[in-house]
Image (cartoon, rainbow, N blue to C red; front, side, top):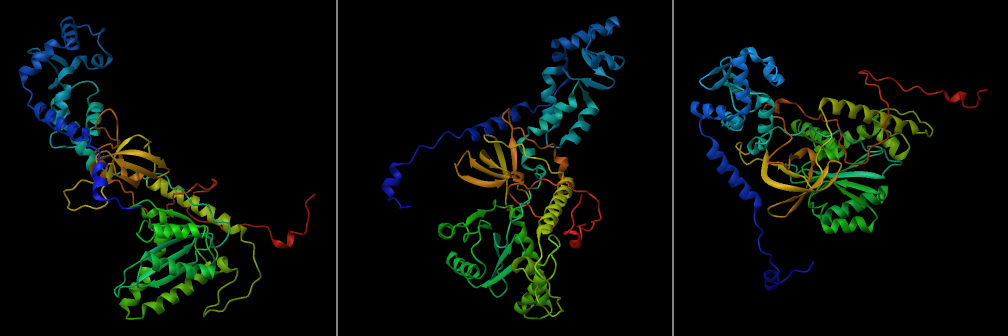
Length: 475
């Protein structure tokens, strides 16, 4: 970690490598500028006379026998005719093979997209497998890739339910608020218990100090999930986690769904703060009232109150509470697994989720995190190499600067090795709706054991054997 002096740094500088990407881009622009010339009738005549397949069709038209022709020309033989050494199908010109790529390039000027290109070509020209050639050409266009619709998200990976309270927690900051305060929000994955700490300073030192106070009340967790904020990604915070034996899990940059549990709670808390401001009430008091009701009410996923799962007792509020004995919460784990699997199946189907084809060694384009203006493409033209892939977590390295980044697979677009190819279908696919509902949680963890879940729209109550029958034996 020592800082080297200037002479030591200068002596270790390496010569800048040859920028092959820039040269390929210049070559592509130059080639496009040369080939984009209008096609004349004389050029088609000359190419038709040199095309062996078209000459065979000319001979078949003279003899009237099409037995030796390919099947595609047999089915359209009655529509074919010869006009001035040019083959026509009705009123459309049959383009010789040597000119087909040039015709497709002319039709793609202005980047109209697959549908418009096909309609434009079908009006004037024809040749076998013209549609598939158009689709392949558009998929290989670098400009179309940069502004194409994003890939469909990968199937959701659900987090395994912890075995006990305060074993796995998630943390995040909410703020700043109008008076400059920030709220440190902590969520327990087992009980969904919420802890909210008001902070005026959100430095790493202040964050560690507040976490120690919380840990003194509830104990030290095994896993802490946080985003890539400067407080949670600093060496000081990592050293703190190492000291207390905590496994720190940082989410993928620009992918808040990976920390969806705490992000969802942030939205719920922010709602109550806005209500308090509009009604002219003290937001601190209103937040405490909300947390009291939240901890005492049954959670929609687990079916139990967060206070009850966290401390093994029901919370006393303004409403009367009936005292109860300790209960076995094995059914809570089953309810949690079933609810998560049902949400996964519903979300994956609605968002058309498909596994990513990105692999180590592929070259990809990365989605811009923010656009400076509306003319910027969705994807940056900078090319990256894939170094590592763990589920949806992909580590990439820039081919020009050598810098490494972590991105979600949904934010990357593959460039096939046989050219400037891409996996996107066309510019016309942008109308697909892939919005994830606010209640969904996307986690980058090991998948839970698969459960057969009915996809009925209406849920059913859990059926269990009465406790009075536990003393009987079945023969």
